[in-house]
Length: 460
Image (cartoon, rainbow, N blue to C red):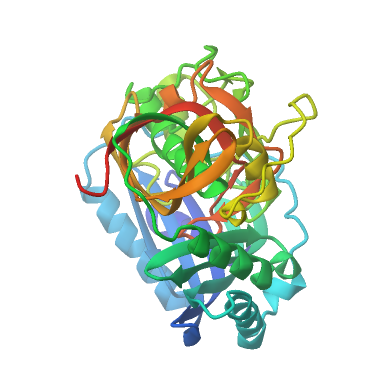
């Protein structure tokens, strides 16, 4: 906190009392253990301090950062950003600084993550490898701790800290991969053996796949595939800048999705700081309530453009790409959902966890999809996405998983696939999926959808 305040004072001394500055000082302790061919091959750790400064002076705005906390380094940062501000074009859309506001205390972080050693991550990797029972494995286990302090020229100050652990691994059987991943707030909740068993079971169940013709199929999407839906909805649909530019499908107040869909962004649920890069307090934000769009994510700039208030979603690059909700949760089904019938045992039964298997048991003929990848936006406003399946697809007939299927390409509008009448069932449990960036996650149950548009098979 003192360091952020010192930078604000430097700005006042060098740029004058009318300059507006906001400063975030962050310290990151990141560690990663990677494994391939069922053996650890890399263990790295990083400890870094970053000072970010955004400055508005004489109607112009500039930003910069430095990885130093020395007096000379901080002065150089301020001087550099001040020079940049004076030569940039005027910024008439400058939204001003966040006023002083109470900020919630950070959740108590886990000592197991904060003080994790390479041996702790290695033990989780060993458990994953052993549980795969002879299959070739690869993946990573990471721990991340971040602390941050904020101050601005308006007298607002805040501090927070957060911790996250995650594991993502594959098991390979005959050239076919099965995967399992999980993100947690407590290291003790990361179960390497359970993840290894899951990945191995999926790999074995995906052997000898058949090819199916393209077309629309009913689907059950596992949490990893649903996480891709959440990620693209967050980046392109509930992004306040895209909404302001009329490039988002979101229309607050309109029932755009199925009543089974409730989406909440909640950074304080885990791995998020209690304030954003502009110092605005973060909170749980309901984006969709029982199918009705309620909000989009805003930073101060996109909020000013639409006559709204910031929702605490300013981040690195948000002024360019827009504010993105990074802790999105699709609420699982409640007790009102039908009681799951016991799925018929099949040779492929291990391909699905119990919650997913219950959804499969109520599907006539369709596909069970583990994961999506290489997804790309074809049409932003309707959010038409193309991509591929991976890590396991299975044919379902009369509620039974009967055959593994070769990977398929799809082209689908994500809002349409989740639209009114399209979501037949939501799983009762969520599985928090890690993102490629530490501290970002997508919390998703399995979904049973009326149809999904597959446009090509393995041969074209």
